[in-house]
Length: 117
Image 1 (cartoon, rainbow, N blue to C red):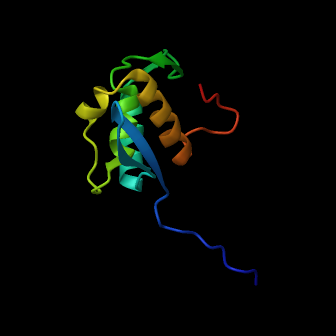
Image 2 (cartoon, rainbow, N blue to C red; image 1 turned 90 degrees about the horizontal axis):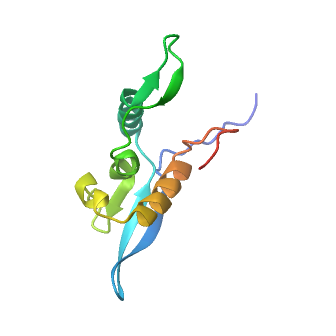
């Protein structure tokens, strides 16, 4: 019999220092989604998918909240409370993009061979 495989159910977490004003930073955490959060995210993405007559994916119907939708499921304040999507939407694009990439990688949402950009 082979050795057991060890699988952890502890969610991965990455602390991030977020500059909110000149010289003022707060600590937030990008965390791995739960299974329920992942399913919610996949359903949201499926709803925005544009399909052709064969049912093949040909594009995206709506880009609104593309970054903040994932981030709202993964971003937590230092007190452990989720950061609301409305607040995330107010952050600049450059910050959202960096955090989105971190959340995407932490949650293994990029398959081998897929482009990260």
